[in-house]
Length: 120
Image (cartoon, rainbow, N blue to C red; front, top):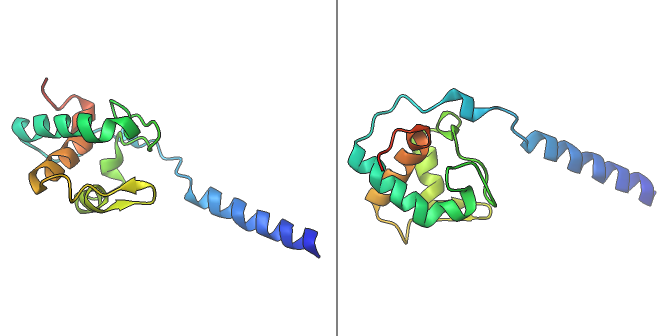
């Protein structure tokens, strides 16, 4: 009976892991059609570099945290903003440590900046 229960548990765990996987190539979709000012994108790039890049990689390609390139097509602006402000799973929320303008800017940068839409 224990073997049967273990097999069932393993089958359910495998199904959950497969359901969580996302094989969509979000990066190939490019930036969203949204337009942001260069000032906002520059601020977003600076905030991203200071706050996000350690986990998500310098160019959004992932590290400890997931790849963010192209994720503006997976999540709406509002959903991405909520993820940054409130966090999710192992990602902490930054609503208490970033201003609203900084959160808006980093979300803008994540949605279009990885595709060369920012200035250096």
